[in-house]
Image (cartoon, rainbow, N blue to C red; front, side, top):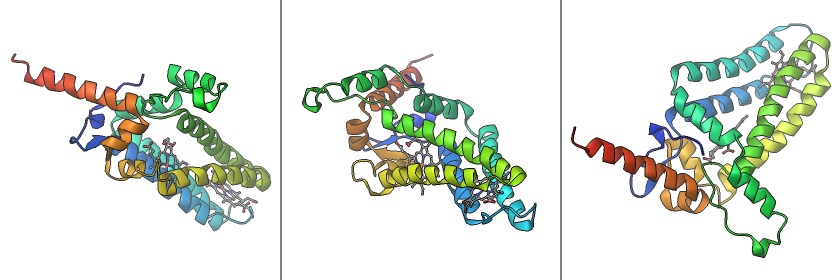
Length: 215
Ligand code: HEM
Ligand code: HEM
């Protein structure tokens, strides 16, 4: 189970705090810098010209921004979220085992903050983004632009799925509010991430109990 941070406390009976400022800043910085780097990309490497320097600079800004968020932001919250996102736990293992059974015999899964699909996509994206940087250096230094282009195509495919889930799919679209404002609808969260909501509520009840205990 991932630990919880102060930003994950409930904000009202109707809303639950899902992503703190640090996580949102990191996410949207990556989105803006990634899109800028795609838009300023050179068609082909022609020595270290102004176009390539701009391209490498915006790619560098992506990394610098993330580093800035890590240095200035809530590192504990970020680390807790990274753990919940990247570590496959008993719930994921039970879910993967349940896939062998017919759909009608499967019990509903009590997901934590992120489900198995989100974790798998996060790993795939992390490897692809690393691949973009490595092959970018290969394109600039060795003229291997084709490999960079191929990794980018795979990344676009995964990101297209991610954006469809975030913006279009009615079942998952309520999560967008959490990435924009920090909080999500409690009823939605209880349906899609019940173990996480229970954990947020338990931490909140504990901290209220602690703060109301006379010293
Ligand atoms: C977030 C990081 C990056 C993104 C999103 C990105 C995106 C792109 C895109 C969309 C293209 C055009 C590809 C095509 O038309 O096939 C391109 C080309 C290129 N990129 Fe990147 N890139 C990134 C990082 C880098 C880095 C770090 C370097 C170098 C250190 C680099 C060097 C190049 C070069 C040399 C080309 C021209 C490729 C050729 O000769 O065909 N890129 N990049
Ligand atoms: C306009 C484009 C994008 C939108 C609308 C978007 C939206 C979102 C939303 C709503 C979440 C929160 C999901 C939740 O709370 O369960 C999220 C999470 C995440 N996003 Fe994005 N995103 C975009 C682009 C990107 C890009 C470019 C990357 C990386 C290169 C990325 C990586 C991630 C990761 C790793 C997560 C956490 C795991 C997940 O929920 O899938 N996103 N995004």
